[in-house]
Image (cartoon, rainbow, N blue to C red):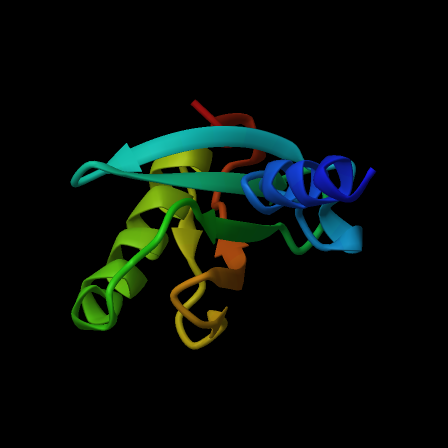
Length: 108
């Protein structure tokens, strides 16, 4: 039983689960510079939003390069720009508002 709980913990740690407000979001996996990002987008709202989750381990020195890659992943996955000044979070999880000028152009 003890090993079952341990294995379950490892399996759950490897999953990308968005915050509760993104549970119904469209999800996409984007790879940038060999690192995977799970992008959860709510594009069907008057103020579209996105959550990006970095997958895998990152050394401390890699964290500064990850933040711009998360913005790039969000924009690539949604076809929208990140609204300037709206991104909050860290190199593990980032939330931001999107600027999508034409609703028909949202998403690839």
